[in-house]
Image (cartoon, rainbow, N blue to C red; front, top):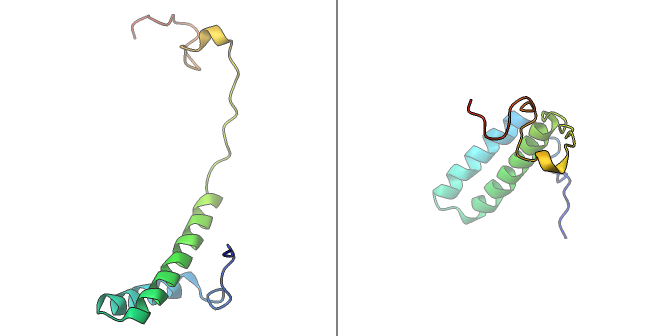
Length: 88
C-alpha cells in the first residue's frame, strides 16, 4: 500500500527546484540512463500531486441545486415564464 503523503526526501524541495530537477532527470532518462527514468518519474509524480492540491484549493464551492417539481424538468432554472416549446 502506498502513502498519499509527500515522501520525506521531497518534502523540503520547493516547487521551482522540483520542476528544475524533474526536467534535468527526464533529460538524462531520454539519453538512455535507466536509473534516471525512475527518479524523473518520482519527481514528476510529486510535481503533479502538488499541482492537483493547489488546483483543488482554487475550486469554487459546489452550487446548491434548487429542487423543482418533477413535471417541470424540461424548463431551465430561469425559464419559468416561457413554455417548453416557445421560440426564443
